[in-house]
Image 1 (tube, helix red, strand yellow):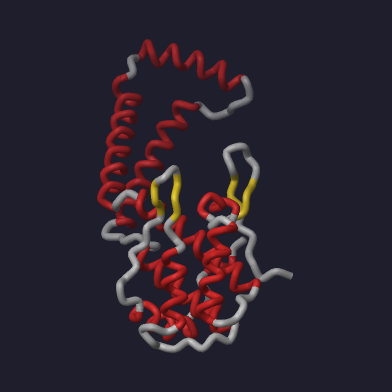
Image 2: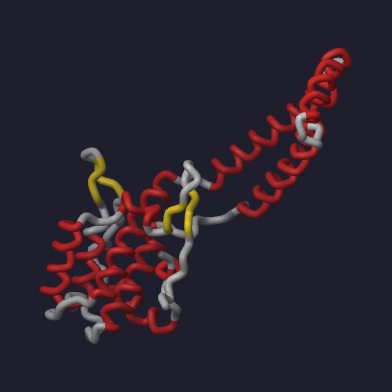
Amino acid sequence: MSDKLVYNYMKADGSFISYRESMAAFAPTEEEFSQLREKIIRTIGIETSPGFDDTLHFLITLMRDKAIGYAEMESVTQSQKKLAGLKNHLTKLQKYICEDISDTTSHHLSIEIMEFMQDGDTVDPVFALQNNIEVVLAICERTQERIKGQKANFTPIHMRQILAEELARELHKMGVELKKYRNGEFVEVLKHVLKAVPFKVDGQTKALVAIPTDLFLVASKAIDEFPKKEPFPLLGLI
């Protein structure tokens, strides 16, 4: 039995796709991956395993997905403004329903609501709307409080370190000796992989990831950290 967890996303048409399928647009092409694999083989001097190839392919796809998502993501300040705007509009709507609708208009609405409810719906939609406004306002308040001072979970720098650690883990599984040398095999492999993350879409380069001139600190930390950690959770999804 596979040790992978199945995590499905629902599409607009109601069908489901797997977590990996949901990121298919960001996956490296066969040619891109083949070229990267050849560079890694030349660097480490042995053939890569199917397990290594599968994890590497997913790591690049994941890096692209997170890098693009981060670039398009609103800041917490922007989110706070949007939530404040939503609360403002909801409060105005609540006031309009409760205070500004005339008795005559309310009477006309009541007639239509009664006919609507005869069709099988037992909930007064206007009453439900008023109640739900209160619920959504409370959710907005809690959301604003929760994200106050919050930082993004998957910044490109954070993901770069995760990639380095998982790369070290997979190389170690294949018996590659991980040495802390500035010009060592692991630093070279890491450099090859990071350079493979950006890709072209309609002539524009996407998923740019900053690659330090000296990758030694990233590589050294990855070698120290991966034995202490469980594999990155998203790698367990299919």
